[in-house]
Structures are given as C-alpha cells and as structure tokens.
Image (tube, rainbow, N blue to C red):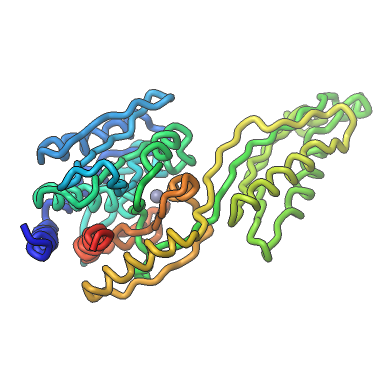
Length: 389
Ligand SMILES: [Zn+2]
C-alpha cells in the first residue's frame, strides 16, 4: 500500500470510531480503579484485555512485584527491521477515586462533555491509545513496532509499574504519554518531578501535669523540622517543599510520644532532586530535642520530565502533525508529575498530555471534551507516521 493511501486509511478509520470509543470509555469509567483498590485496577485491566482480544490485538500481562499487572500490546513493524526502535504509547489504568465512586456518579455524556471518575485522567487516553494501535494494525502495522502499555499505579507514583515502564521505554524512538490534554489544547512539554515522604518522629510520653519534665515532645521536634523543611522552598529554582499533613500526640495531657508529617517535594531537574534530597536529610538529621529520633518511613518519587533536545524535536514533530490536521497545539510546563518523567529519564524522547482534552482532574467535576477524542487520536497517529516521513 502506498504511504498516502495507508495514511488516509488510518485517519479515516479513526474518524469513524467515536461511538465505539465512547463505549469503551464508559466501560472503563464505570469500573472503579482507585490506586489502592487492586482488585478494581485488575478489573479495569480485564476491560482492556477483553477489548484488545476482541479486536485481535496482541495482549500480554506483565506481572509486577505487588501482584498487579501491566498490560502490554505490541504491534510488530510493517517491515521487520531489527534496528527499528519502537514507539511507546503510555497510560495508567488507576484513578484517585475510591471504590464506589462510579456507582455514585456513573459515566455520562452531556452537551459534549463526558463525566465520571477518571474520565479524563486518564481513561480517555487509554481509549485513544487502544484505537490508534488498532488503526495501525488494520493498515498492516507502522514503520516501527508500536507498544501500548496500560499500567497500574501512576497516581501513587508507580511503585509497582515503574520498572515495567522503564523497561518499555528503554531504546524507544518516541514515547507518547496520553495524560489529558490541557484545556487550551496544549500538550505538556515539561513536568516537575515529585517526592513524597512520610517522616516519623519519636519522643517520650509523660503526664503533662505530674511529670512534664520526664517527657520529650515529638510534636515540638517535628514542628521545628517542618519550619526548616519549608525554608528549602526556592521559587527561583522551582524547588518547593510542602508539609501537607501532620498528625501526632496521644492526648492533650500527654507529652507527645509520636508525630508524623507527610512531605511533598517538587523539583525541575534531576540535579535539583539530588540537592533537595541532601538538604532534607540534613534537616531531618539535625536533632533539636535530645533523645528524639526521626526517620523516613515511606518514600515515593516521580522523576522530572526535563526538556532535552530529543524531546523538543519530538514535541515539534507532534505540533507539526497536529497543524497538518488544522489543530493549533502549544506546549505547557506543569508542576504536576507523571510517568513521562521515568521514560524521559531512561533517555527516550517523550511528550506528555497527548490525550483528549480534560479539565478538573482529581475532582468530582472532572470532564473530558468528547469532540477531542478523534482529533487527538488522529494527531497521535499522524505524529507516529511522521516519525518516518
Ligand atoms: Zn494521570
């Protein structure tokens, strides 16, 4: 098939897919898959598996350390050439919403807007990736292998999926992460990285009336450390530290034996991440009240999506492909983090936010702009085609 015919076959097939895309989106949204609801994330996986298998697309399950799976669908290249680096279409199945949310506010479409938990972030992106993959399968494949990956735990920084994502991204020619497009239609050209820490301070309990001097207040120690942590924020470099949650103490009349803080750290570069980690360690290592102990009891991190020349070139290619279809797309930097940081960090040219346009993610008002499902799918398909134009 000549290139132009293949291209128009792919694009015109995608144009016909709005109804089945919405059907798959509805099935996914109505399947609760909060990150901590492993059974739900697995069920959302079954919806994708059934879809892929029903359409004769390859489907493999990749077992992960916590018992979860990522689903991978690999479409071989049209003309097998061992040197052809693959293209990765990335997306996560989990949402931030607990079990029961879909029953409370099931999928619905009203005035061109689709609603429901995870509809934009990022079940619409999963649907788009699955249909783009199928469009290429029907046309006999792309010039390069296409790999679609449906992961399990992005909303909690991908502790289980990270290794799967990094393995899938290594050596890729391009990674397109289908997080929701910005309300402006822009995609994401850079993201901050993030680190989430739980810090626990232990002191010594004592009756605050009869034996105050015997106690050591974990709350006081923690509060002093919180102040020091907050001084690490530097808007000029973009590094921020936010202690978003604190708990502690036992009763009002007890010197607090224990206190805990949850800390959110954001940074623009890997170097800034290393600096922040060292500074935080120094703060936590400095003891104010004798005989308190401080330790980090949990830690998760997203790497930043740093703008490299290769990612910039991929961004330009996507923007040009969208422009061919009459769409004006720009790039935005966001402080929000995503799996695209992991793929960029292993050296794969990466763009993010290629999914259908969404708004108000992580809130009950989350919406997906239905009229963007097909244009975004077409822009992605054309960008893949243009990689080898
Ligand atoms: Zn997301």
